[in-house]
Each structure stands twice: as structure tokens, then as C-alpha cells.
Image (cartoon, rainbow, N blue to C red; front, top):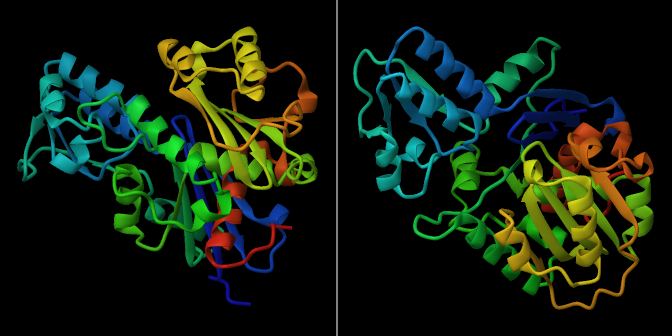
Length: 350
């Protein structure tokens, strides 16, 4: 067996990066797994150490997810220290570079000499490869990555822009298999930043990866034909999808920290019936809600829940999905299935 033939699946969230290293012919349950701090948290740690040392910094690398690293940049500036950034790295903080400069970040085309560099990057296969090498494992020949990409939107709300993209996806039928085989849209800057380092990588949205992964749960497999509701309660975002036969018929997204169990239950009840309005979610601080053109006549009351914050919003554990016995790797299992689809393997991962 070729020891490199396989898939490295990396699901990159705001709190963790979940990693699956699977080789062709191997039982999925036996694949190497890691749940590690997210790249944005690693960058935040580097910035914190440099701030405590009283050092200016220059941000280099690529566009990546913000969150914790954005907070640390603000703390660096508040401490009276200088933060330089190359333009591509600066897009991490806003698509409008004038607004990035308004934060106090100094844009530069060349890193200033003598200033410590902090590398921004969502996917660091060198770091992952070093961890795998300690256990005599190579990096597989196929890379599949999930990031949450709002899309390049310098002048418009990125929440609105993101849901315009989802509206188009659902209007095209919401086919998950087709999406796995498509290159990312030109305006998906985080996805293209990953592909700049790994041109052949399969790249998906984190919510979509979780949906596909949840369908690998035994109940997801059984309910897929008639329809079900998949909910991913992430550390920062909660995504729900109405799914039938690997097609998304409806999509909902909100910020996890703005939800409680009562609010989410009401949203999901209305969502399953096609009654939830996009404006209600957007005006509440969430991303939105959108439906495709197919009638919602499936058994969407059947619900599977995944994600690290699921216990904060759901008390009935019978809802919890655990594909291959591991809830935290749900997105990685979805990426693995997507990678097989992208290779022209039509079957479902066993």
C-alpha cells in the first residue's frame, strides 16, 4: 500500500483546528486524529508574547480567519506598540484596507528590518507534518480544508454578501456533491489563500463540511433520502441545513454567542416549515436564512446536532451525531467524503 495515498482533512474553526489523517484502505475509525488550537488562536498567542515583551510586530503571510488574532492586534495597538502588515495579511482584519489602516495598522509592502514577523496562515501543513512525523506518519497526498469564508466584500456587510452566495448555491439546486468538485468562487479570499499554498486542495465552508460529515452518522445515512435537519453548533457560529439526498434545501446561520436554547428552538421550528425570514435573523445580529426552490415536504423534524457547543443549546442527547464515534471530527469526515467525490468516487464513505 502506498503510505502517502490518502487524505489530510483539516477543519479550521475559531476555537480549534480538527485534523484527520486517513490513508487509502484504512478503517476510518483507525485514522490518526488531532483536535488542536485554531490557527487564529496560535497567532493570538504569538502576538500576546510579543506585546508582553514590548515589541512592535509585522504581520506577513496570507489572509486568514480573524477572531482571537484580531483582538490581540487591538490590544497591541492599545499598548502603544506598532503593528505593520503586508496587504494580503491585512485583509484578515477587513476587506477594506482603508478601514484596516483606520484601526491603526500600518500597511507596508516590505517588512521593516529588525521587527519580529508573525506569519498569518489558515493551513500550516509544515506544523501538522512535524506532529505526524513524530508517529512515523507521512502527510497524505490529498489535502482537504474547511474554512468559513465570508467572501471579499469591502463596502457591503459580509453577512449579506455571504448569504447572497448561499442563495445562488441553493438556486442551483444545493448539490453537495457538485460543490465538493467545484473550485472556490473567485471572491472567496480565505479559500484561495489556502489554495495559494496547496493548489489542488479540496476547500469547503466549515458549515458545509459539518453537514456532509453529519450525514455519515448512521441516522444521517438512514434519513438522508427523506430529509433531515443538520445543526452544527460551533464555537462562534451555528449553522443549520435542511438536507435531502445530499441536496441543501434551506440554510440558516447565526452567531452561537447570541443564541439560547429557546431562541434557537423557535428559529428551527419556523425554519423547517419555510416560515423563517432572512431579515429576522439578520436584524438579530445573525447571518441569515435562505431557501431553495424545492418544496419543503421532507421529514425535517428528524434532527442531528453536532459541534463543540451543542450541549449549550440542546439538552436532548439523542439528537447528537457522532459519525465514526467522534463528534469533534464531523467536519473532517465531511471533508474526507468531499475529497472522495472530488476524485470521482461516487459512493459514500464506509
